[in-house]
Image 1 (tube, rainbow, N blue to C red):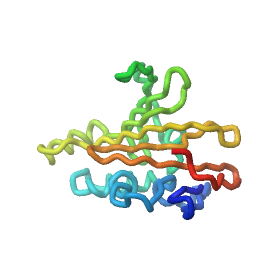
Image 2: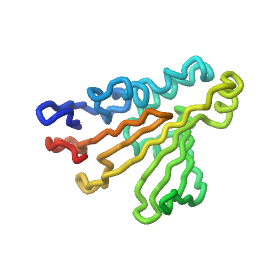
Image 3: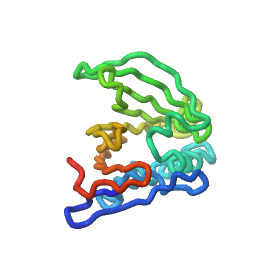
Image 4: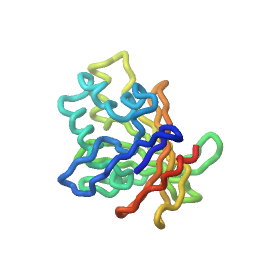
Length: 196
């Protein structure tokens, strides 16, 4: 994967598909732009709540992000349970099919919204499980439990697979967009700057 930092500088991450070789957490991010917000939303998002979460939870979730680095694996990996929640409409009238994803191996718990028209993943809303949220509220009565919203967009075909080339993640006031170039099966990604 290559990520455009500027027209002259690229950032490349080598990805391992070997389960015994962990990948850097969220290898699909560009760590050179707005590093504090990247840390808050991608690299260190669980650690910032470490003392406010049940013991071991932050480390388990961080490990899950290393193992389940590809967004599809978050739906199909070992220990993932899916539950269809029904349809939902956004403020602009867009229809979504909503699926609850409960990763019982690494603890991730989120709602995935798929566009009714295209069937593509549009949004994820990741939060604490109901039990973790209850624990959080008891130990942090003045704080709201964290929720991370990731919007997937600019789908383009890569070697026959529709793939999102833009991720936007928000939590509270922090928002950042990540523009990606993808390649699969050992191919080299495009060296063109991702479309913004």
